[in-house]
Image (cartoon, rainbow, N blue to C red; front, top):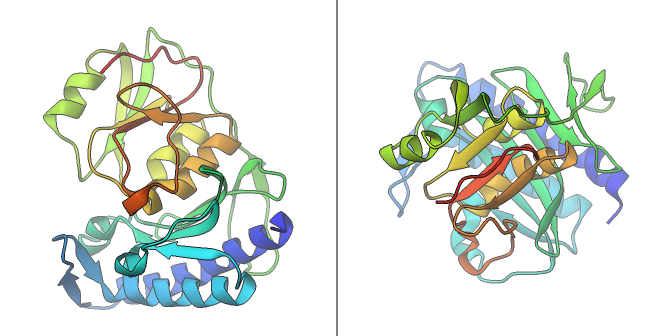
Length: 265
């Protein structure tokens, strides 16, 4: 895999998908359907999926592609594959809250090594560059020429007063009970994979997720966090969260800046 080409392609496709999503988001109304797992899907999810899938197949025809909107057809796994959530945070999109993202990532031997997270309604874009360092690019965004970028690095956490970020749409008592084990200075909520990016930028120290997620929900954010020096581990035993699992379902996990003293489940 040519990482420089991959970075260019992922960034461009994320921006193009973001344009399509915002076109639909800005309309007076849009179609919402319910998938077999009872989760919602909109025409924006489907349009962005088609655009990204076509672009990745054209650029990397020999690489397995896994996307949320084609999940039913994903019966195989591979050591190396691309994984996409074309619109992460569909509930945020439907409720017009803005915390939704376009996620594209590359997995190698179970590890997300490259990724892009674009939040079009927020005007924020995070991605790993060609050498695997994570950056935030500031707009306006030219699809072919990257703008000014800032290298990202996780913060040095203070365990006497941690900054915590948690899910906006999937918060539950179990999550609150786990967060209560820490000394918390402040807590914020965010939707979609933006939570990983807030840890990557140093705006938060820890993001625990005690709820169902799929690999396409987390891979790009995981890659961005890893490229900024962060880690993502399983909630139960604190071993690294790996990808390419049969069915692509994740266990509960914790994303954090090294230096956070993790509490047991």
